[in-house]
Image (tube, rainbow, N blue to C red; front, side, top):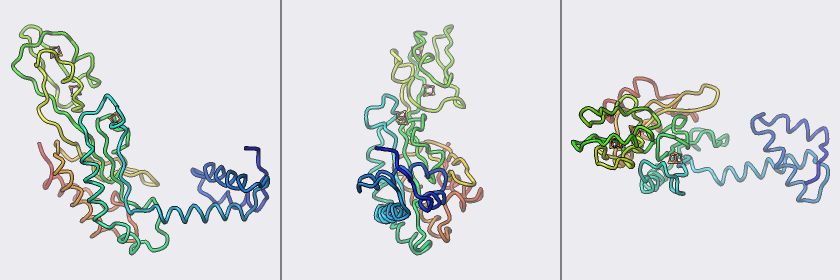
Length: 270
Ligand code: SF4
Ligand code: SF4
Ligand code: SF4
């Protein structure tokens, strides 16, 4: 696409767009003006793109954003497969009708940033950023040490990203340091002797993260949770959110330490 000229009115108008999306909006305006055969961008072109964008935003808005990492496309790091969980989360979020709730609370100023955010990452690498979502879910595969003698092959210590395994060659045993282990399950897959096996798999759950003007990281609920647990936690989050959030307040802004403590008492596990 050729370099486009901008009229002073169009330039003044684009400067009102928040700086972090300005470049993107500018490119979009230029692409749409160019598609229409123009070489100069005028105020009308900026307004037309803005109107189309807002129209599209209204039709794409669901009241929630659910996403997942790229694990299912073949990532070798998956601690477990969360496909059914993602489907079931989508169903529960749809049933909760958050869009109507938000329309009532926010009215016509409803924007994507008001939506309730949930994400699933299938391993602790956390590519879908569960730490900054209202509800962040991370796949876990918990290792256990059996009575089977350890051959001292070092496969587990080499693969462990968190330096969480200690080997004792004297009595052919292995030990996992619970505080360091992020339950990614990598060591389980490489142990040739059955000294390390999967104890259970499930999900770590994080609550109340967000970016924006007052960012905060989500707090982890203790324990490893089943798929049913995660759905129950989502239901409790949505109930709390609908009862408490007013005028479009984000979950993270209303979820106080005492609320988190109540969730720990109700859903926390050892
Ligand atoms: S979070 Fe883990 S499983 Fe998902 S894409 Fe990233 S590395 Fe792969
Ligand atoms: S499950 Fe724990 S001990 Fe095993 S590789 Fe992952 S972090 Fe290391
Ligand atoms: S992979 Fe298994 S056999 Fe090899 S050192 Fe680790 S625990 Fe021992």
